[in-house]
Image (cartoon, rainbow, N blue to C red; front, side, top):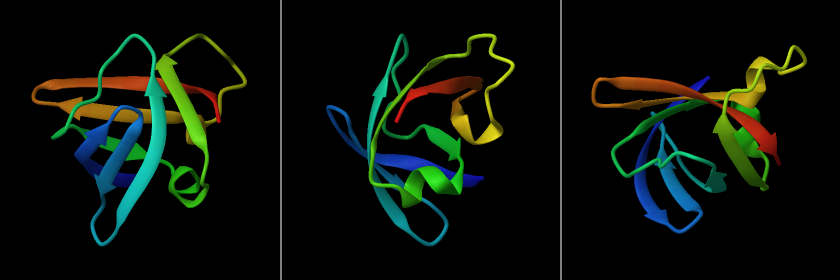
Length: 86
């Protein structure tokens, strides 16, 4: 998992900064907002692929893989989102 912080946002384009790299991802978040300053933990395969992603609230899916789950941390709040598309 890569720990990154959101350093920029323009509609669905998110600029993330990891420990040694910056990433630009196209992500749509359903029923939640991810803002500049939030931390996102995501699988390395997501930042390697140039794709459009959609993440939303966790649904009970026994086939969900760990790489399809991201963790978002904001202040004292922590929540998990599941990849729907991308």
